[in-house]
Image (cartoon, rainbow, N blue to C red):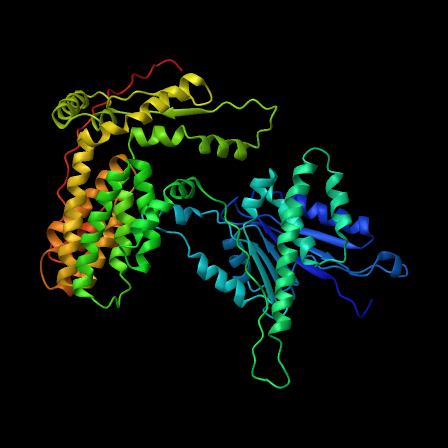
Length: 550
């Protein structure tokens, strides 16, 4: 016993992922296989602000061989003395690493590449996500060996919870002296849901086992040779298995056409262009996507004028390929109806709720379109009349008109309604919003082209201002107003380098402060006027009478 020490494992799982069940499985497996084990847990603050951590120790000598002695286990992990770290979410893995628990000399790290965004990440007006590449570098730096794959996707495909996938990963790693049969026997005894758990277990087992074999092979091939002492060794592998989203499926349908047109653009632009082109073909048709090509070619021509050697990697054209496609495919009631009524969406919902063949699934979608949404599909003259009518109602103290709808997407009537609305996309180019959006897009596009010709950095900064256009309703309108104000007062004047700095500062200020105070201060700081204050109607509310009787 003195020459042996327990095998230590720290598990990090978010709320509702079955971390407690996983720990109970491991203890039951140890008993089934005849080994002594102990587990403790530390609850997190909340489901996302802190994962619940579970610490497991298993003594690697069978109880029958201990001669009546019992090992003494620790209640908590010791920094640097951890054999393995297992986590269901990449940021939580990094959090445990920053706590100093794993070590590069000893710890095996198995983590999911899936992300559950934190509250702070969701609150950002721009892209507030933590860069997964930086998190992966941290995993590589502080692990003896590592395995990274999408546990959430495997659990979803298997129709189980991620704890079963995590159990398969532990078994596949060979961390504990248990046989695969020991793991499966305990899972089978779980009763209902055991079959789905075994599916997830098997997939994860194979993924980690194959990754371990690949790492061992690489280590053998790159092992130091006595005749070549300077050769480096490499350990570990990263396995990623990302599930396809609906957007990828839509892109695949137009991939052949996009690939043919993409040859008109340099290699660094083609991937982003292909996604944008496929999106617009799906959104409005080939003619609309061809307009996207023409607009992007104008940006490319301007960038080649200022950077004929492509020293900047055609970054401006690449960014425009992204943000231009997103703006041209703006959301409206037709687009929403189309996405809500697709077969891929129904299949995704079935997978999310794990509906079986004998289950009855009903799906209701709630809509509340108002005057702006309906007016967007009307010609400009008629749309203005409808909007003026609604504004007069609001001026009289009434709420803006809206039509609350509850549509059963599972029913024939509900599906026919949505598909009929989706089929009206041929009317979109004749609507007032389409014309307004195209005018704004053209102004932004001209700003990028002219800015690029003045200086590459200026054009690049204006192109990145496409990040301001996001969301719907007031958020979308505010973003467009901010962009137009930047174009009118910062992009056109001064030296190109100074203008580029001003545009960059204004964009970051707009993304950092939804209220706009920081943006106004930045505008004034760079010699531009603050945004005009918009008139907002005052609604007078009668104070309710309070009865004197209690």
